[in-house]
Length: 405
Image (tube, rainbow, N blue to C red):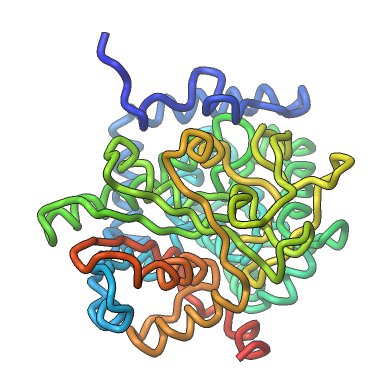
């Protein structure tokens, strides 16, 4: 029997990425999760489903996205050749719509005419509301009250698209609390409602399913860089909140040992617990994360010494989450991907640099990955090739930036 590649080896039949992942949910959610797993397994081999998915990705979302050679940024940094994977050019302004189209089609396939979702930066909420409108589904989005304040534009967009947006005014009032409320809604309305989870988090099959809907990022990037450079890149850079844009880029390069992968987390305003959202970047001085269960999956979670979930902070709402996708935890343990962290002020400076040099205003989330690349560029060789995932555009962050800049 042929040995499975690294990319094909996870998750196993129990939804495990090595020690991580699994399904830790109330009994009432076991049946809908099993229903979702069956529906997704069938859809993967259903030519009609795949045709409809590809049509919407192309004609509605705007795929394929360009792989742009950033000539001026390359010259400015004086290091490697830098290519930008332009997920910011997708309809709704971020990679999130890839997964939302896939799960929206699955919800319709299962006869679920309502979707609920959580959102932090608002991009997943906007993408969910957009797809729900396109497919004729009812939509409710939960969002932390703090995130609603700093992402008011996206709240307006969701409501304009016909979604009900419900503020969550408990806990840290951010993404973690929005997920809790979305899951409570799902438990209550499970017969008619699909939970459209926005990242590679949660109980099996969500981490694998969301990854698969985002694999198109890496599949396109691989083909595009081979066309442009006739070889694979030396480096991949992506920001990591839950981790969907990063795993979407990384997954189809996992078996290419010479391609190095860097996931960049939120370093926030300091290394103390509660000041950041860096789960795997302990080597760079950020502590507090250890394996545990949060919201359906076993992974690295920021925790207080007595095991309570820690508060977090990031200037970017999309990175402000105490846990990380289980596949990233597995990749970190294996040493296949490297994880580091960038502080708020570094991300803001990187955003300004890309805007001024390339005429591209990235999302604050994506700017974290750019800041890490800028930090390393001087030590890289000129013949090295980098692909950086611009996971979203910065329109949503203008009010935040106005307060900082």
